[in-house]
Length: 282
Image (cartoon, rainbow, N blue to C red):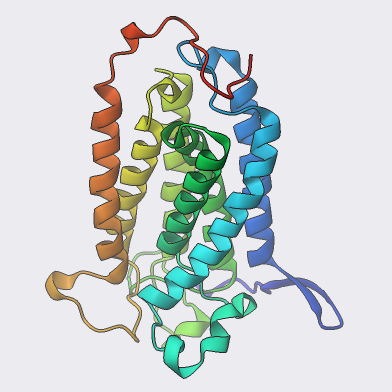
């Protein structure tokens, strides 16, 4: 099927343009922020431990997370995908409006931001990571939809009936709409899995488990989708048919599984019901 006639610019006034991709970032951050606040205010999710932060602290955390996403995402793209910019055109590195963001770099940036925020406010970083991770799939959903609207990051050629002819590919060949696969899996499916984890067995009470489920879950989904996503042509061929996305996701799977096992081994019976922690809400 032909690619829908989407304009990546929602509207423009002179040199000022509002792009769908920018709106996706804004929507992901705002909706994720309100979702995290709603979880903190839902006392039924915290039968063993009080939430690690209060709503006002989440308001402050949003700025740290936003900076982590932007700085980490841009630097990750440069280091993982276009390192030549460092010596050929270093000024281009700061031109985030020209595109080029890496999820894995953004994830590292957010993790660093969480560590710094937790250290500064004497908060358990693993529990802060759990709360943040539960909301991340919201942003991933909006971001992948924006990738599709932009007609970028398309998939490999396919003869399936829902194959899309992306104008940017330049070959007129139907391809997997891998952006929509990722929106469905990284966004909707992973969000529902974490929703079950937080609202079913109340896993926010186990340090690092929800964060581990997100990290390992994203890694597994990304490795699977990379099999139908077109590799970046400017990168060297990797052994065993691996792609850069796969190689960056495999450590995520290992780290996530470690967090899950570590958290599930914790003996919550040693905690009195709704134990209070430093800086936790009363």
